[in-house]
Length: 216
Image 1 (cartoon, one colour):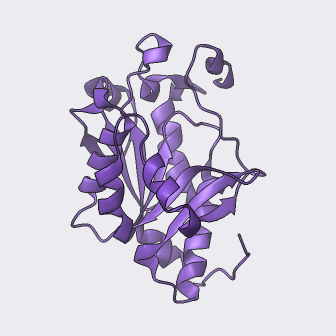
Image 2 (cartoon, rainbow, N blue to C red):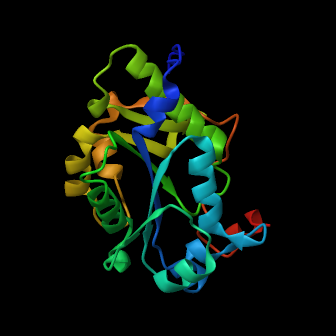
């Protein structure tokens, strides 16, 4: 996307964006090991994702839990996070996205920045870059509730994805199964501003036993 000037009030703008971490999956292809509890650098993977959101600039972080939610609460240090239970987590990522967006109702958040728990190669630099693009839109008096931003890797859309509040109902209405917001984003492809992050992050997933080699 075109480089824009970052607003001097970018900290205030970032405070309007809630980090939304989807961490409910049961790790079906990993022998039923929930991804949130996989160990990376000595701590549960969910902690690393929360730190990426906070260090990247998200002051409010909502974490959607599902599989072994009680164990995640007991083992992971998630201070000051809003923990959202998704009783329908077995229905797929779409149900977690719906639960997470619903949890933002009534807050001051004007946008949600969505990150997946199983992408440890995406750290605070990518989060900060997407938030800076959001701040730049505010500096240009863009209609922020209509904002759609996505990190990109060599031009290919990835995470994190930022949804202005005007999109939440549409995303929730179309989020089904494991496709998450894919259908909504495809329908609104022309409205998405891509923020290249391939130089600061790697967008691999931890889906299979082979992928565990990415964890330390």
